[in-house]
Image (tube, rainbow, N blue to C red; front, side, top):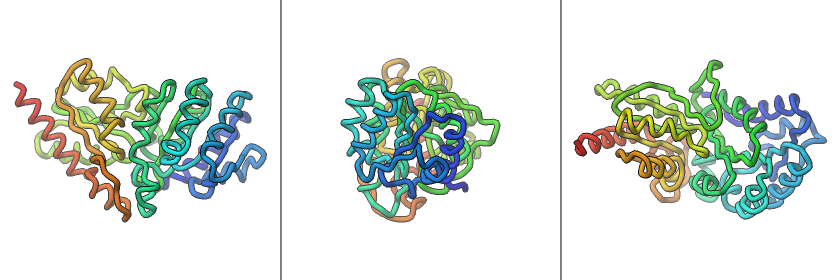
Length: 313
């Protein structure tokens, strides 16, 4: 298990060393998400706007228009609620090159309850024209994506976890935005997954193998633009799909995959995630299990997808 927030802070500092046009802004969360590390290194390129998420976005757009690469920082849920009008109208409409870093994603701010849980942000952000949506899976992949996000032409929303999470990838991991990564091959069912649930999906695939089921695991780190080829290849090759995400089953990764499959090549799709409800407070891992995102939930969904495939003949 590796902490996510220090990995982000260190990666942001490294990015600042490589490019003097990188600036960081915070809505008073710099101690929480560790963007204070950038503040310590580059105090003249760090701006704390206070608890004012709408201003955070608008000031970031101004920096982008002036030729800078602004990384705006607040909790994921506040980008997707308090600041969404400014993101839509001032960032997305004009294609501003701002980078929205949504910390404490999913249920990872577990003890602060529903006001701070973020299980609708992917659905909201991917609905905005011109917005790119990214979900790194572990602390080793986050710095890799940060460099690509800085170079990406246009607004990017990136959500990342608060807590220590399993290290899934090593130094050989070389992803590309918009291109899914196949973490495990399989022929009977494909698990398309993002974020912290990648580790659980791999565990589920191992359990399925014991049961004689061959499961492909595809890390869909870029929710938008989604890798159409990877999804449709999964549909054609395995004929059954499970999506898994630390998010509502409505509108996020599961919604994106289901929409594409329904349009292009209909096969059974089972979605693992939060089932249209608010979560309670509690220990993080227990919340994941309680709200339908356990390894056994993924296994059950995979078996159901395979059964649905077989029933179709």
